[in-house]
Length: 190
Image: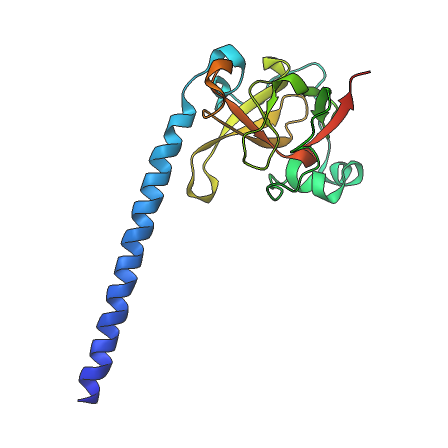
């Protein structure tokens, strides 16, 4: 009798495990399918079309050692720009910034996004519908955390800025550059 109790318990645990795996597999598949839309080419506003193209060649390219980056950047900036971290939603200093000016890369000061391209996406991160110049950012496929996304990087120093999605304002090209505040500095217009 005790043997049947143990066997029934084992069968019950196995059934729960199988159901859990099926649910997780369905969730991962649905998540990946919904993210595949992101990789559509969008040449006209600068972003998604550069996926997997590699770091742009530039005369003003900034290349530093890891030790040099650690000296130049705050720990938060280093975590975002060099280790591809993400700040918590609604906590970054620029997510609700309404001032007029230009957002620059915190790693190399390249101008990246103008305030007139910023919009409230409700996500908790600064969101822009286009960069200042298509040549100032590039994108790379990111498959971390079981998702398929397009990572946005600074074209001068290859610093991780955030990700670009195709759920931005339709009348502005449909892109949403979701950028970490700690990857940016801001210069207000005079």
